[in-house]
Length: 351
Image (tube, rainbow, N blue to C red; front, side):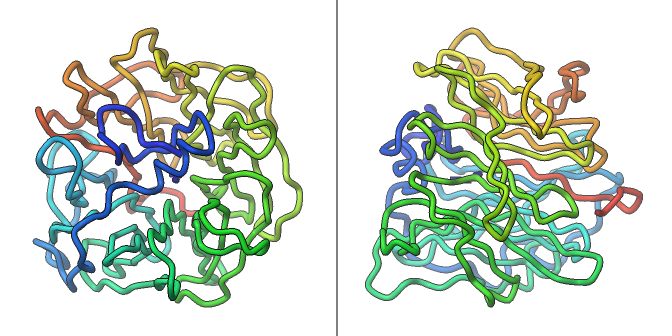
């Protein structure tokens, strides 16, 4: 988050990726324009009635309507670009899907009145919706964003997310990491950071979390931390680079997007989770295209990401983890696809 902290250029104010250059920009990212009030309906178009993917690999993602801004719908597409189907389209801003491979369900963010809250689709196809987080009384512009959801072998659900709700230090408007059960219970702040923390993602099958933060020096870097707030470690340390939107593979690598202060290049980089030996696998040297929103495949061998075209819109692509064999997945002029998330297929390892 990813919050996920600015969504990138070409998305007006919303640009749903946290690519922060400062705490002010991060706040802008997680606070898009006030949307049309309303909560997700019980079912979106096609919710709860979709056939299974025809391949073992599929991708959840969000698509805007109108080409600039929202609303945003949730969709699913097979990794080969076929079977592109709508799973939640109700006129709201439905964002940042997070797949749970054991539950075969997903969490996501949607607007309700003046708040962005976390919901779950228990059937995994946009139906059986339930609200997990609630509005804070008296708070405006609440943003619970960038959920990451996993279930242990023992059946324990954990959702980590970022929020600007009042934190342990009684601050509001500062984005911090929170965790909870999928029921919304056992809500707790992971750590009280001195800065803005966003875009958390679980290391598969563990209690470790990677996230982006400006807590060290005001420049966004990738960190890792235990759910209990212990073992904080900094992964990236490059001066003059903004490193955001981490994704963690089963092979203990972290991919993220990295850009210079002017955002005249935005590249996808892979680093060992312990830091060091960072390697750019998808580089850009001009404003367009920009490569953003990386997500590792379940086996860690591929990365799905969003690439900006000459019109400022984004399409989804897949590449090998070394940056080769790039393939376009969506091709929708005047629309944007962002925040892709792999759906585990029947033969995929589920940690």
